[in-house]
Amino acid sequence: MSLPVRAIRPVQAASRMQLQRIASRVGMLIPTSRRLLASVSVSAPSAPFTTHAARFSAAAAPDASAPTQSMTLVERRDGVGIITLNRPKALNALCNALITELNAQLQALDKDESIGCIIITGSEKAFAAGADIKEMKDQTFITAYRSNMLAFWHDVTRIRKPIIAAVNGYALGGGCELAMMCDIIIAGDKARFAQPEILLGTIPGCGGTQRLTRVVGKSKAMEWCLTGEQFSAEVAEKAGLVSRVVPAAQLLDEAVKTASKIASMSKPIVTLVKDAVNASYETTLEQGILFERRLFYSTFATADQKEGMSAFVEKRKAQFKDE
Ligand code: CAA
Picture (cartoon, rainbow, N blue to C red):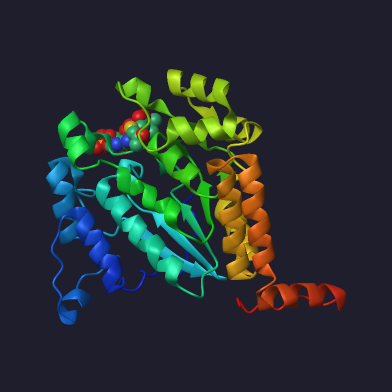
């Protein structure tokens, strides 16, 4: 059964700045005329993204049967932006074009004031089966180094709104790494995780050895990265990699419930929470606590703090205005 994706519609054309950023990443010249810019659609990245992909390998094109089909579908529901990875024939293998498109969609949702939380999901069979092996296989050290291969995946972590990875099926290699770049992972009970790069004669290249180790500890991360073995959603939950496991068929609805709860909070305060939790990965405990306390003080400059605490005292539901 496929996931219930309703009323799918493409994200509106990206801003000029977004397009320029994407263009500079893919080494493309974007025309300055507004009319020409408007003709470049982020949600249907056929020619520009194919050009970028083709530079790496002919196999880099989207599914050959549907070269102009968008590789991400976007839906908005209850203040939540849902991005569905849509490259089913390749089990959502994360080619350059797909990640470029994903980043553009994320940036558009990050700027959309009606959206308070974002979900990235895949299909019932695969969240994502990893970076695109066919696209990568002929790389040399020099081409990888010169192109700063895969570095732009990291843009996912620059999104300020919380991102939930809703994982059904395979989350392997880059798929597991993409999920770990998100802020919360909710897994369907049949999800399978792994860092199988060692079986391909390589190592994780998008944070697998780093984020997995921080989350599950050295012994488990070492075993999983050294053997490439898959592990279940249940094991992932016990190890602290996923926040909870739900029946596969209810995954998206459960993720939307959590996301819309987050979206109902004050948006600036949500961003401060995300910043504070993320800081715990980057700093010492003492510096992290100092950072948290400064952010805590800063909330007292917001109208939403006044509203939240007044509502508690007055025994009513807070009405946040994102101010
Ligand atoms: N890259 C490119 N294509 C992929 C792919 C990947 N990572 N994973 C699956 N596919 C393609 C297959 O080649 C196949 O395409 P064709 O029909 O054209 O042959 C299609 O998706 C379906 O795959 P399978 O026939 O293999 O499906 P399956 O159900 O038998 O097996 C699977 C599913 C266990 C996920 C298997 O496809 C698999 O092992 N995939 C590779 C997983 C992997 O090694 N991921 C790590 C990639 S490296 C990486 O991610 C590096 C990094 O750190 C960024």
